[in-house]
Amino acid sequence: MARKILTEHINVPGIETFEVYRKQGGYTAVEKAIKTMTPEEVVEEAKKSGVRGRGGAGFPMGMKWGFLAKPEGVPRYLVCNADESEPGTFKDHYLMKMIPHLLIEGMIVSSFALGANKSFIYVRGELMYVIHILEKAIEEAKAQGFLGKNILGSGYDLELVVQPGGGAYICGEETALLESLEGKRGNPRNKPPFPAVKGLYQCPTVVNNVESISNMPWIINNGGEAYAQIGVGRSTGTKLISASGHIQKPGVYEIELGLSVEEFMNSDEYCGGIRKGHHLKALVAGGSSVPILPANLIMKTANGEDRLMSYESLSDGGFATGSMLGSGGFIVFDETACIVKNTWNFSRFYHHESCGQCSPCREGTGWMEKVLHRIEHGHGSMHDVDLLVDITKKIEGNTICPLGDAASWPVASAIRHFRDEFVWHITHPSEASAPGAVYRGDMALV
Amino acid sequence: MTDTPNTVAFTPERLVKAQEMIARYPEGRQKSALLPILHLMQEQMGWVSSEAMDYVAELLDIKPVEVYEVATFYTMFHLEPVGKHVIEYCRTGPCCLMGGEEVYAHLRQKLGINPGETTTDGKFTIKEVECLAACGWGPVFQVREKYYMNLTNEKVDEIIDELSK
Image (tube, rainbow over all chains, first blue to last red):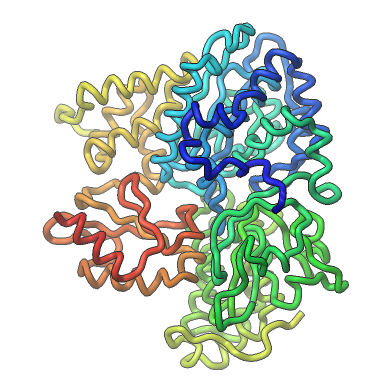
């Protein structure tokens, strides 16, 4: 069995309660950090661990903490990003509902490290039932002296507030999240200034993902160096993978980074292979925004090396032959899936979720959805394929936030690897637009 | 805004809740309570009317337009009256791979309505939503706070029958 950092106790009956969580060694990291360490020492352990942002960007968390400005007399804030909305990603949802105290403990340790006395957990509004679970956990922790005034007699005060979103994917972008937390529309901010200097209420702020923060209790208990020994290279530690699509066992799995894609996909400990009687066609490895990979580039890189579940290996080959680990949203497609239809579906998502602030994204996502809709429904023309590629190039890199890139990559990569499937839709409109129709020719043109 | 007196107000219990929400934020930052308070209003009314938005603006001491622009940006808020149960159906890729479209067709047929419509008895409204972060347990829909997962046609029948009671 692989090492578990986040999910070791997740199936213990009653683990959602303070009592059971505490019995399993919970809140010892708070005691250790607050009683025996300085905030700087906690930051140092985070840096040593090498843990990278688990929301999708993969930026080293300790380094991000190191950027936090500390002007005299100005409050600092920690905000947990629990606005999990990237299609294919449901790990934070699972973690928070199953073992809420892990995040609460991580928030206390991290807030202490950053010198924050009021911290927020911004949860997507649809997960109102999870918000109630977190609020209950906070009440329990407060009653036991782990939150509130003078925590464990140390003189350190911390209040945790759980904030609901309102159903906007864009609020997963950290500056849009801060706008939303201030009671405004979720329009991303221009950077600089970065949140580390001017964030929530124009005060220095750190925004971290649920899973990133949930690693902190283990890191404090065992040391950053021990964490860094798990994983491979600069992909340290474990990662929660949300597995969905045409596999035997969809669900959330904790893996040690560096596990081979083949083992993750086929072993019974994880996905259990493609559903019976079918075969692998494509993979979106890290949430809907990352480039889709055709079957021949999933288990092996273009160089013929084993593809690993790590930041580096999944992006090996760049966008020509690689993808990204992203948020760990592992969506598997078998031969019954239509790539054109799925690309149109993802395009509709990004069009729906564009905040409308930047013209290339506001207009471009709509154009892509429209062109893909007509190709899928048998009204495409040959120049539509290159038109789509052209639109992606004009959105990518030309917007305030990465939503424009996120909308472009699935389209560009689908055409890069499955161009013949798009062309078939155009040359065989009535066959292609029949219900359930799927192109069965040579799948990948790499 | 209208000239007629505003008849919308929180119930006494919800008003206490709303005031607790406002007190969570630093002084002068009461606008941060806008999203939680809009959720609270929708919980009470079933939807958020423009009168309700005016009331919320007054409660938070902000301009009505600051509430309008937020209520119209976030898709969870119903800006028109809806049925007793709003079925928020996930239409995004991973759910579709799990047969989401077939189950969705069955649901629409069973209720005899399209997205955005309400059944004539006022019991059900269907609303299409994007990814609900439950892809491994798809197809999925949500009714208020409850997630209904791993849906099949048979399961949909059971759920609708149960909610119809």
